[in-house]
Length: 496
Image 1 (cartoon, rainbow, N blue to C red):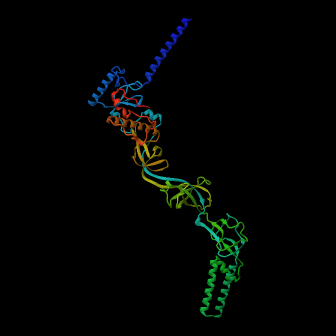
Image 2: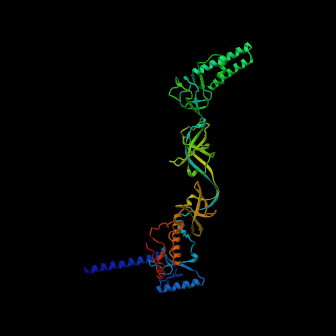
Image 3: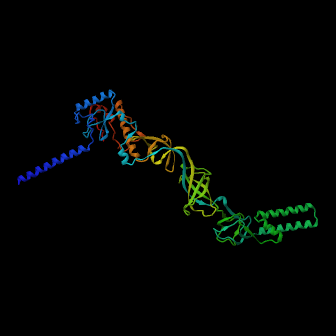
């Protein structure tokens, strides 16, 4: 029994040894190693990690080689953690040899190099910076309304009663000259009698051979009475009919002064209604030309003005467009919606459009001509600044601050910072921008370490903290630990 337990224990120990050895071999295959032909600065001729003394000798040899015109080493970094750097060869906190970064491999400030696999895995796309005209399309909404210049009020200049109405309903159409109603007015009847009396008096003077002065005075009286009837909206035809018949009409017909729709009337029933001078009995609106009350936001006002051509679409007639133009703007911006109302005149010859309809209005402004422009998705907006990632070729990318102009139809005008023909990223910009910020921060900290002064706070690209960095963390060697780094071959791990 005891021998069986010992055998089982020995088998478990042997199995653990086998698993440990296999894991070690797998780890050695996974972890990156420098090629044997190019021994790492911290390794001996056999390629095995060197001791501290050998590492110091390698550093001296590298410095001597640099003086002999060979590649100059800027600094060493950990192969698995680019945040960890040192000014001397040594070991990383993970126990791996630090690898050198050479001067000819170094990039300009802010630039970053990525591998082809990164470009493929993240589907990095670029677009060319173009030069051309950039028209501005402004789409807004509006509500159709009567053309106030084509709305006519029907009034009388005398008191009376409507005895017969030919139009009783709002929405009826009338033509110019149609009879609207007949009215009885004692004043109008009295004036007709005066006209007939003046006409008869003039005839008697002419027949009796009176003095020319008397005939002239009688003629003036007749003309004055005739003008009064015209001022009270009797037509020339009605006055001629009155002169020929010599009979006073009890009621006088009132005719429509315009063609259009009856859009308003004074009461429910017009017949028998008493009216007073200046009272609006009916309103007639011509719908052949309508107005659209349209709202424009403040940032669109620089592109539109009076007389600007627009297109109008109505949900009631999909696919059809009406031409129009902006007549005028209201004098003040609406304080609640922050929009300015514009009145758009729309031709409506077939009378399909009706007041109150909801319409979509599109204004096409000239925008910018001979403009440098990129796809709008290529621009990274960061606070008060805008940045694009420029592709320099060979997997090298450079964040660049730009000044923006007009944006329209997915394109963005760039007033400064780019030149036509350059390539910019339109996807995965945030990843490249974050890496560039990180490398710039490390470069600034290293330059501060070489000068013996800490890097100034806040001197990050774009004026921001590098993407992905938590407050309180540091990238690269801390400013206060330069001396400790120079005295320690393995450098110092930035605190997390």
